[in-house]
Image 1 (tube, rainbow, N blue to C red):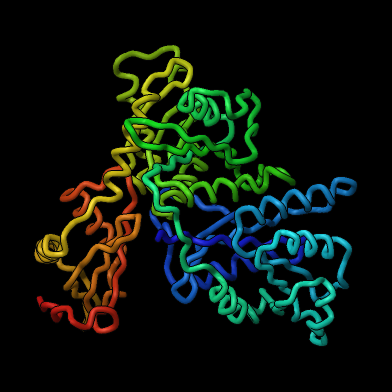
Image 2 (tube, rainbow, N blue to C red):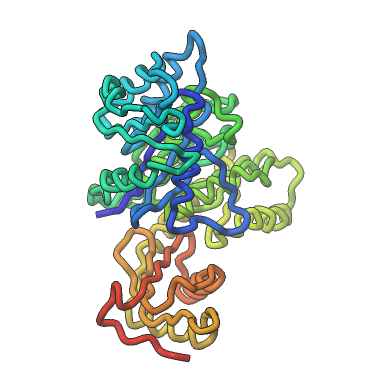
Length: 449
């Protein structure tokens, strides 16, 4: 069994409060995700946590009336969202009568056969609103909210997290799934074709050609490998109304399905914050990752030292993921393309590396003895016991007392020490810290200083 982080999409016409709800829900997170310096986030998506349930939240703000193209635009967006989302939240306004656009959005959401929740927002502006009046939209579950006053959101989240799938059953096979990601026009489809050795994806100089996730299965070194080529992820302000908007959701879904992600970076445009954003999403998802600098053939003036000069600049942009290997490639000349398969297999091996509990606890004690965690005046964290779980992402649970007082820098110290000792190159790792008496009653008592 493999845990998959579910996806929730908020849809509706413009100005009903989708972005406000998005920001309010993110404010309910119980854990800060990707707080490392250098990781860029925008309002299009974020991983949220409520009552112990993680989920990706998609904000579809910017859906505007396109006059004659409105119906096509809405239909395409809802279809794209439904393909990837587990739950669709349709939002309308309490202070405005149901519009024809609201009816279209609701109809298309219901047509998806996914779980649909209706949110009547801005109830503070209409104290006499009767939620039963909105049942004519055909959506059974209705919640009234006011994002400005933060009312109704808690109840919505409690119901939402009960409906979210805790895990999805993954087909037990030995297939390695690799997603090719990046901004538009960085060479994703060309690399996909070179790796697959056939023209399955459309290759064009025009940015944004790929709007769906193309797939192909090949064999390498006796292993089945499934390649996923994704649409480019654009900056929030540059995502066009219509199909382009939901290329982001498609890419996010591909990340969730993948074991290893190749993040393509254009050698002619190395310092783009959006590349960091995509890398942060991959890291948050707990996947393997390699930084693939593309179009190396386009660098006319280069010598034996050019790569060594550029590598530190690229790695600096991804300080939040120093474990991600860096490789320079050219789909035109084929340089280092075949090495990508070898790299992916190495990363996959590291993702499934297991360390015995006894060895982990000897390592933890050495880390704590060398550098005890700091705390408050009369309380400080005590780390006593560690074990590795069976998740696909290398995941470690640490039990002790006052673990909530652990500073983020100490957690980073533990990860750095773990990697120095055991490797795990090319893959994200996760640490969870729990109180001993709550989750590990038989573990030894924490040692004092």
